[in-house]
Image 1 (cartoon, rainbow, N blue to C red):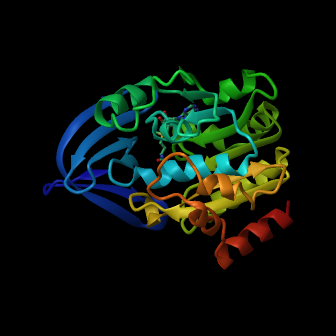
Image 2 (cartoon, helix red, strand yellow):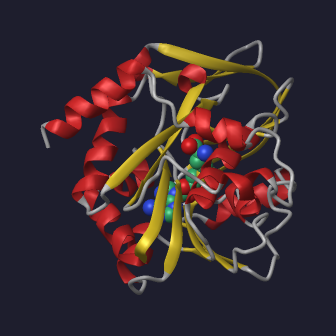
Length: 289
Ligand code: SAM
């Protein structure tokens, strides 16, 4: 992470030998929590920016893409989702999208670091607008321990809105973690997790598919979507479950009683289409399982 003399903040992506920069107006906050270093900036063009351990988490301007794609496709793939667990997601943007679904009755959000939520309430109040919804319970605990301890069959959908697979988020990409998620979900339960860039992090993506299948999920499917502020500008989320992940409740989606800025039924179908190089890589890697 660099803030140069002209006030450009750059996130360096070492593995791709590239960087993405924002022109910064001012630094609004910086703190080291017991888990990670959190910074908040006012940018010139992207609104506010949250950075954790030098990595861009979100901006006011484009977070809707990520949050909508993490929440809505999985909720419209499940036949009747009521009980949702969000692991991570401390900025509360995913929670805000999930709570738009009137038939969701309970959301447990489990983020390891309360400071992410408190700072989000202050600097991104629009994402925290539903935090006091009676269906939402915010817990501040390690997601790994939560999935180890929770009762079997307690959720319909699990959304893993974690940091990158380094630091406290690393364990959220392991087979053991997925196995526990599988136990918490009933037979029809679905898991979705942010799965990095399809072009920069193909090895990670195929590793996730492999680990999810090894953990007992029969099917996996990746959704891809644009995300200007993440490395390569192209991001993904991967679903795991036991039924067909390629079809969804299209009619319910078309008549949804809430607004979205990016997500709709055509985007949902399009996001499931895999480019040849990704599909080929996933197939090759699943074969040598
Ligand atoms: N959209 C973001 C991205 O991919 O850059 C992720 C945003 S969200 C802020 C990530 C959250 O995951 C952080 O608030 C962090 O505290 C949380 N987190 C990391 N490891 C965790 C763990 N083991 N259990 C629960 N939450 C965790």
